[in-house]
Amino acid sequence: MAARWLAEGRRAEDLRIHTDTSDFFALDAGDIVVLDGRPYLIRNSIREGRFGLEDEVKHWVKRSIDLANGAMRIIKLVFYERFTATIGGIEFECFRSPRKEARILELVNDHPNFMHGRSAEDEKGNVVRVLEFISGVSLAAHVADLGQDHETYFYTTLPGILDNYLRCIEAIRFLHDHGEKHGDIRRDHILIDSDSGHYRWIDFDYNYRHRENIYGYDLFGLGNVLIYLVGKGDVLLPDLRLRDPGLLSRLTDGDLNIVFHNRLANLKKVFAYVPESLNRILLHFSRGANWFYEETPQLLQDLHEARADIR
Amino acid sequence: MSNRLDLHFNRNVLLAVDDSENARRAVAYVGCMLGGMPGASVTLLHVVAEPEEDYFARLEEKQQWLDQYRRRVDAFLEDYRRELTGAGFPADAVKTSAPLRTCPSIAECILTELDRTRYGTLVVGRQGLSRKEEFLFGSVSSRIVGHARNCAVWVVA
Image (cartoon, each protein chain N blue to C red):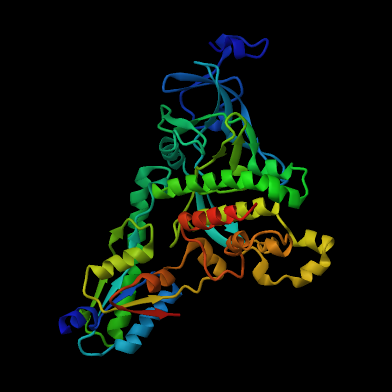
């Protein structure tokens, strides 16, 4: 079954077959993992780059082939990681949870705005996730690669992106309605499926010990992505200092992102054609905000109204 | 009318605490304000938020975590109880309570405990969160102030 996928010179009888995936470092390219009686051929570990950092090899995530049908799959092995994350100087406790991701995969199995897959326990009870491969680029890369000037982008491209992003927020509301959080909302955690065109959330195995507002961190992520989309990238103070020093002197602390103080949230000060209704939403994620979104329906209602103002 | 007033305005105080400095200040404040006052009673409440199973690599770790947490809660509740009796409350006027609850919101769990009983006043410490902390994680005292009904709320800052 695996012979046609093997590298030249490798014999099928030399294949290593794993039914216990506890030690993910022991699973090499060319090995077979059997889950629920179904064999998968490991190709390689996934690399993930982020914000210009060098690619990090995720040894617990393997590109694989489902030998029963030849389909490409991503296999996420169990990696319990607990650590203290720091966002804008605030520390909080984070952890990876295979069980959470498995639960959400089941919940969203026919939802177009999420990655799809299933979970299976190996012989040691490790909850392994077998994910369908999504062909496409991340929303972050898509926006970063657009060659348009901002005004052209704002009137011609952003409306379509916002329509899709609204569906992504609806999808997060769906999770919250079921008591689940995404846990790691970032612009590179939305893939644009090149087959269907759908924007799809990926990677929901992160979790954190929430305090009072269980969904506050997800909303923070949604706001950051929105600011990135409207700004066609992060509008950073160092860039403004070089590009438009006069503008910099008109900014106040209240115009900055509430958590990332080198990013502008009040984008209307740079792009005057951003409608008030849209800018007001961005300001709810600024240092000057006196009211914060606590639930996705609040954000959705405002964003639907603002979307109608972009013509 | 007077029955409704009796229900909502009485000298029974629910004092929601954890092991923070803010909670300790709230306990000291209640001791100072109400210690020795005839008819005043206090219940020291710490809602034990049931941790999500996701937090643990193995399910048996959850019980170990809870046992350890319980010991810590019992210790600070006993500490606070002694402080209040030292401030003039009769021993039988200070109770402690540490129910285990599934709590998407600690504030709502505290308010639920309040609704189940006859407390006229709810006292909480204020954590003194920054704006961004409140944005990211929410504030228990702010939510309590926003959602409490039929009682007085004292926020000790």
